[in-house]
Amino acid sequence: MDPSTIGNIPPEILLEILRDLPIRSLKNARLASKQWADVGARCLFNRIYFTPRDEIMQVFTKITQNAAFVSNVETLVYDARLFWRHMENPEVYRAAQRRGFPDDFFDEDTPESETNASKVVFHRIVHTAANAWKPEGVKIDLPSEAAYLESATGYSDLLRQQTGIFDTQKDLDVLRAGLRRLANLKYIWVLDYFADHLDFIPFCWAVDEFRWYHDWSAALCKGIANPSSWYDADMKNEGISIHNAPWDFRGITNLLVAIEEHAPHLRHLSLGCQISRLSAEIYGREENARPLCKIAPRLTSLKIDCDMPHPPDLLSDRHFKTMQDIVKNMHHLRSLSLTIPRTSDDFYEVFWDAKWSHLTILELGDGAWYSEEIEELVSSHADTLRELRLRNIEFIEGDPWEVVAKRLGQALQLRMVCLMNLADDSRLPSKKEVSDKRMERSARLFMKRTPDHLLGLKVEYGTAIAWQKQNFKPAYDFDRILNNIPD
Image 1 (cartoon, rainbow, N blue to C red):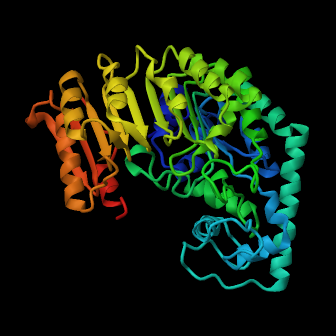
Image 2 (cartoon, rainbow, N blue to C red):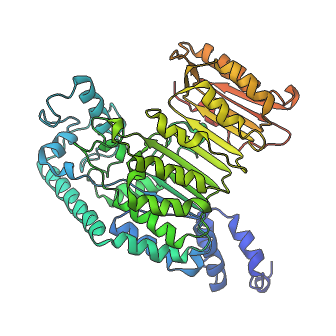
């Protein structure tokens, strides 16, 4: 091609060309000319990250101050992991590096089994100055005393930095300024688990989706213990343990305030993830309830993965009122994902009377429910529902799954159904072959209105995915998904 012709490519055509390039080639192409640099910048970022740490906030600010970059950003991922004040205890920090705990770290009345389970959870956050991240069960050599002291000091410095950011609301100022410039922001994910952040692969992005960010974040910590997730901070109970590990929700509160004020085009909000669920405590706080209720009408997609606080009576009327207000105001909702372990009938009753006239995708996960509750919720959206995803749901009373699937299959017009580990009456199938056959049979019943020659079906490891080949193109690589589900 004539070099003079290359320089005269219209920007809209050049943009389409550059969008198809691998990231390394795109960066090289931007060096060709100012025009190519400006147009190529619009292809570099469609997702950005934020967490209350100075270095990452500086990167966020630089990206959002670049007019060429911000035009392409549609997704914000909020890293909710925090440095934990209990780790400033020298014995706790040293014991964590030894993959254990000091004897007096737990209350005397903590059951031995609970203590051991908590240690297993806590092991996952350790990343010492002398050792790279290693999988659970791999022995880690103890660091030298000098490395330990350097690591502990670095952790305290970052904890103080984080506390100062929250105390001065610096994170809120940065978020407000950044979101004000992100005119095309549509998706926000609040996560605290990034390496393989969701445990049920068929319901999420690829396992390595955030690998590079996880590695970058770990490098910024300079060899100290990684920031903890709220899942790791819960040492004794489900939900957030207010006695042993209170969690600082100010960062998430500030995010919600900034979204309310400066993200008018937001369409998807994800609070928590399946492997690390956000405490329902956030819905009981007035400072969170107000922005959440104002954000709700904008949403076409909502994902809530939350744990109930323990004991359950910590739930107040405020929790239920906030959830009811959110549900009531989601007039344009098309996709709803709920992972809420059943501990309170009141909490679930928030959803039973809800009716979303545009709901196309419904995902429900975890807990022991009555079969009629599932049937009522699903059948009330039969006119619009096209994708149904059910995982780890156990019927404690009512008809078995095959009967419910048969009735719903006669009413639904699904394009896809995904089922994982469904059980009746507290009896999980003991053999893989039994589980696979039940999931396959139930999937076929849910897709009853699709002729066999038009039905796609994959079954493995207690998971069945069935879809209508004529009118639905799966968003998943099923072979990769099913081959990577652990035993």
